[in-house]
Image (cartoon, rainbow, N blue to C red; front, side, top):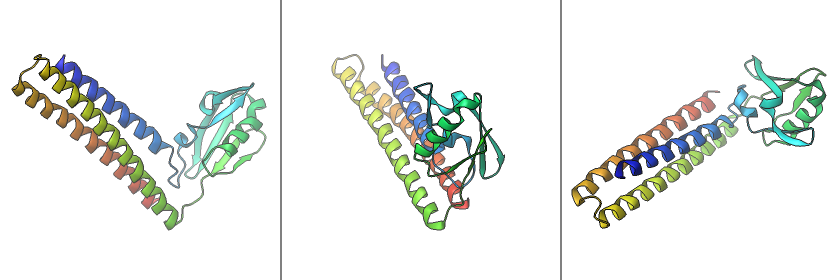
Length: 185
C-alpha cells in the first residue's frame, strides 16, 4: 500500500515533467524545430486534425521548416491552420509545400521568452509539490489507520521527498537548457 503511494507520486511527477517538456517544445527559440508545429490543428474534411497526421515536417535549413502535405488538396487548410495558431510565423505556400521561416529573435524578445520558460518551470514545480502533498497526506492517513508505524511514516516521507527533489532537479535542468538555447539563439 505505502509503496503504491510512492509509485503513484513518482508516476504523476513524471507525467508533469512530460507535459513540461511538451510545453517547452512549443516555445520558439529562433531556430527551426519541428515540435513547434505539434500543437497546430488543421480542418481536414471538416474535422480538426493534428498537422503531423496530414503532413511531414522537415528542416532543410537551420531557420526553415518545410511542411509537405500527404494530400495536396489540404495545402490551403494547412496554411490557414498555421496562420490561426499562436506561433507568430507566416507560412509561404508554393503550391506543393509550405515553407515557414523562423525569424531571428531580438535580445528583448529572447529575455521575454526566457522569462516565459521560468514561469512554465515554476508551474511544473508547483504541480510536483502538489503531488508530494497528496502523497504525504495519504501516508499520514495510513499511519492514522495503523497500517504503518510512525517510524515507517518518517522513512516513507523521506522517500517521497527524494522523488520530489529528483523531479524538481529535472525540471530545473530542462528549463536551464531551454533558456540557454533561447539566449544563445
